[in-house]
Length: 304
Image 1 (cartoon, rainbow, N blue to C red):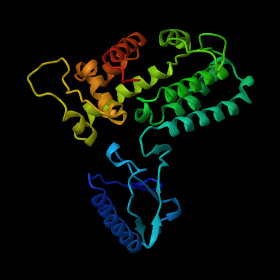
Image 2: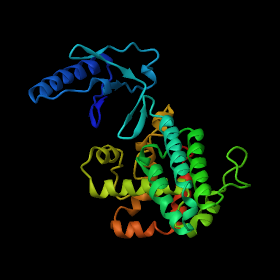
Image 3: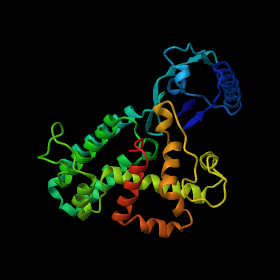
Image 4: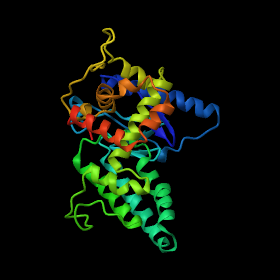
């Protein structure tokens, strides 16, 4: 995968030699196009990242070099693309650390003038500046395989809620080290007056809306085609309409595709006939959201 600012070039292959050969040929075409259009590529901001499964560990595999106009393109283990830090194992742990860092900075800035505002306006500030940071591209990493990353984001969210709104989401007195989080049901009741959801519920709601919109509005997209290739074909059977997949690694078990299949099999497939207006209104009800969330939890332990 090559990228320069917002531009990426990607290719997949089972053979490393074929992979690098195709990418090298693409680089030659890009070089010719840039010269023809009198443009320059900023090579100081250009690099490559190699994604592999367990059979091709980057520590064990000697990768060929990528050359662009006689300049070596570095192969990195992680990079930031469109504001999201992507690592070559797709763990997104570096991104979760970056999210918590940016949230902490924004909270510190807001607290400098927080004494000027009432709780209603503080809630608006929280939604504008804090929620937006957690929400950005959350569909990519909502299904963390690491509980450490899950807890890191939850604590960051809870600390921001406490700092700005003085609402405690911990079981005991506010402490980032020794206290445990409230149950999701208790968090929901605590935040309901602020029209704010617990972080897991918020991520869950955004994920099912993302799936619903893509399946119903973009049926020809590559994402939906890949998902629908696992749909069973026997008649009108409504129970588990998608074939479940078994994976040997967490990368597959916690992949977006696998989580999407489990959500569809749990409840979402029955909702696809609804209009978006009806679907959206249904999940504005927190009890409906909680019910669907619990159904997903029961269906698999590799989810949230």
